[in-house]
Length: 87
Image 1 (cartoon, helix red, strand yellow):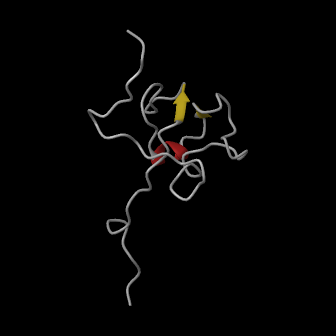
Image 2 (spheres, rainbow, N blue to C red):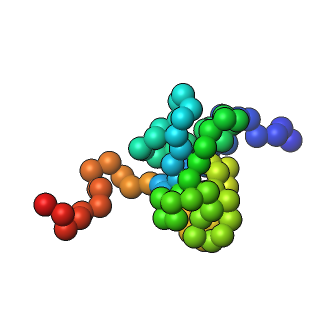
Image 3 (cartoon, rainbow, N blue to C red):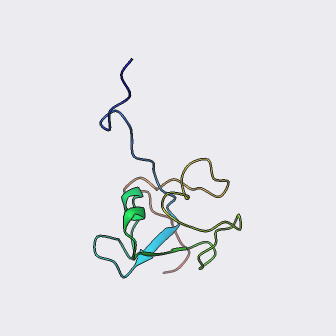
């Protein structure tokens, strides 16, 4: 039996609340992708707590903020942004 290839494995989806700054290739305002976890100089924070620790009291990081974590929220589909009461 052959092991699965990299092509057959899907890249995990990262929580929409994870953000990063200060590193090329990492989004400051948009969703962070799983591969950003390989950038050793990246800084990450959670928009739910405004800190390096998520609502579940665990550190935030692209490889940790994935489905299965109790506070995980999947990215919104394009065109389905949150509605606010602000004018």
